[in-house]
Image (cartoon, rainbow, N blue to C red; front, top):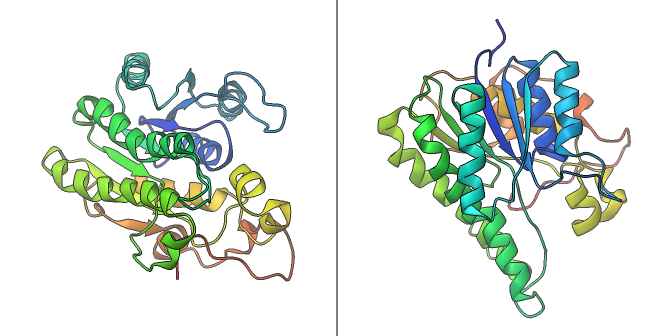
Length: 275
């Protein structure tokens, strides 16, 4: 039996990048997958929509439900989570993958952009987790997994883009809090972050361009780490800010070369917030 058979996973931002990779990996392990994102129609620069990912899952023989979702709208969040639960008979796992990034300091960052990062990063973790909680309480293998980093208070991570840093750290702090709050319900709550840069649109368009992507890894490493976490059927792992490579090493993985985005002699670049 596959590790996530008969489980339903709700993934925000699931149409591209890491979210898409997690969706496909969960489907490969037998999960029913809800792909919830704003990308209902094709984007001129970014490939993939909720419907193309759903089609990929169905081609694997899996079950998928594409849902249009703006995580900033709490009423829509609740409606979509309830719709998914009604469709599949419940929700076992929530993956808070949707994210917004802008690496600028306070002097030049528009307040509207800060609001966007706060809403899509921190506030969405709160809203989605709260909306999913009634369904998670009913699951024998309930998980909340948010893509956010360990809390590193080195001032260098605040100096140039403190706004982004604080919204991502808020996701992790909510993770720590919910792990304790939800412990009595048998719900595991963790955060996951990559050890190296992951080659996604965020890197290409917001950080360093295609050249930097060559020094990163494919989203598959995050997907495999996420499945390793979600497949745990007890609460032996909760309240942790985990790193993808460390999760996989603990699961027995020793070869990471196939995760490289490009075959190059350039060294892999560490991700943000990791010294």
